[in-house]
Amino acid sequence: MELSLKDRGLLAKLPVPFYDQMIRDIPAPAWERVLDAFPGERKRVLEGYSIGRGKSLKLFHRSPVMDRLRREMQTNAGFFQKVLARWRGEQASAVSYLSMLRGDFISENLWKLRDLFGPARLCAGLLVLGLLDPEPVARALETGEFWSRAPEAALFDILVPTLSVWGEFIENHPEMSEKFLESKAGGGFAFDLETGEDLEEDESAPGSGAVSRKLEKKLKKLQSELVRTTGQLGDLRAENEELKKKMNECEAEFEKKLSGAVSRKRKEWFERYQALDTAGARKESERLESLLQRTRRALELQKRADEEYGVLSDIREKLLEIDLSLNRIEAVYAGSLVVHKEVEKVKEALLAEKSRILKLPGIGKIVAAEHAGAGEIVARINLLDPVPANLPKLNEMVKTAGTLVELGLLADPSRVEEAVRHKRRQVLERLYFQYPPKREDLVREKRARNLEDFIESEQSRRYDLFIDGYNVLLRAHGENGHFSRGDFTKFRERFIEAVSAKSRYFSRVFLIFDGVEESRSVAANLQIIYTDKTKSSADEALIEKIGPRKDGKVLLVTGDEGIISAVKDRIFALIDVADFYMFLFE
Image 1 (cartoon, rainbow, N blue to C red):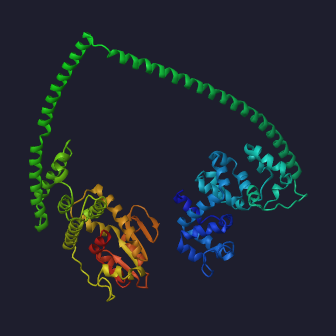
Image 2: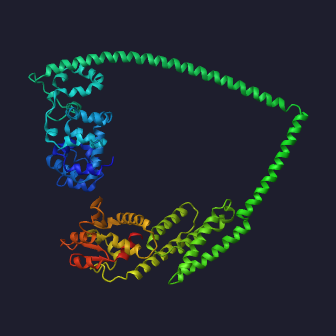
Image 3: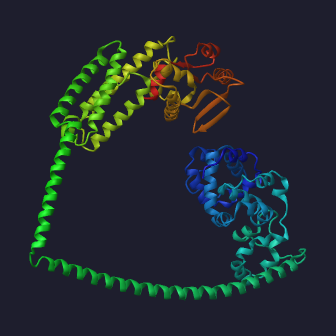
């Protein structure tokens, strides 16, 4: 049950009675379970009260606590969604009844349903089922009359499909048929009965007698229909039993016939081999000749397959030559300052040919022992280009090595881990070669001289982090020619996932990109912001957000000198782009 953007915008528009009704519908133990999943919200809601386990059960209907719960539900979509799910469990009968109704029926009978359920419960039920989109429903929710008007006498008309069930209840409680209009104004008759609220008798209620007679007439008619339907149901059940009996008889007869047929066939097979006749021997000779011809044909096909795919000795020789060449290229990658483009092309061609050979049928006879273990993984790592785009692959290789150790397929992952560390250093050196840091002193505290020290000291949790998104991505990927334009979206999504995973080390994180139109999304303490290019750029948005800050608790990740110069007096530290990118994918 995921709230749409339209539903989230609705939270701030719903009136106070809507939230108060939801709070009252959920019992105190259920509120305890909801707040267990949101420790921060629990602390804010029960601040100033004893919050020991079980001591808060009497607090949830107090005005200050209800006010705090309402504010959390209005401003925190995730918390509201959890509360809504809990409300659905407590009001399962209401949601079940609404789920049986069509959307057009709800639109046409909205006001009757509102009188039946009450405005708050109806709105919550429609929100649970995702039925707030129809225009008449959305328009009615914005009127004050929807939330305040008293119920009308015709609200029971909508219960006609279920009056056969209600009939027995009203027959046992006849006073209810005359007092249903006296429930709380706008509270919802059906659910006032559910919650046990007493309806005080009022003989002067206008039209109550007429409504009672009309209701009793409908009940009698539906009760007679129920008796007729019950009789028909009994007849159908008897007919069903008769059909079952006939089906069982047919199955037994089929099993008997099948058993007889199998016995006759077995007898025929047995009698066939009692004596050898010449006709049978001639047929067997012909069958043998046919089999020999198939054998000769199969061997001819095998000869053609060997010519097409090769034999073991040839394939083993080719693999050995490819591995030797790749080892030499691996040494070039490890020791050369610059790798020639032609070497890169040859490397890709050799890897493609090796991949083709390893897909040949029966290749396991050759590579089962020769191309397994840490050596093959290390070779693949060493052949990776030292570009930031390969950092996620390195992380996956470390995880894969750990999985192989757990499965007993790899004894020691240390060679793989050392190769990954070496390749990461190459990536970092390449980044620093392209963009050497121009500013010193990551932070001003003497105890933390670099980013890792600052994170490990947990001082970073006191600061807000602002990230110039495309500046980091373009410096890490955009100017080295190792990606196509179509891959940039994939790099951005991996970058966002990495920032989200490391956001826990900071108080709040603001990741800002240039966009087509303004939008933002919030997940935990991370805000992802896309600016409207017709109004402002990401640079202007960063300056606008950091400029008013005077507390000095700001960390900035960018290589843009214009931004740095504009906010240098407002930030605590400037984090180098290369350092930050390596921190994300370590």
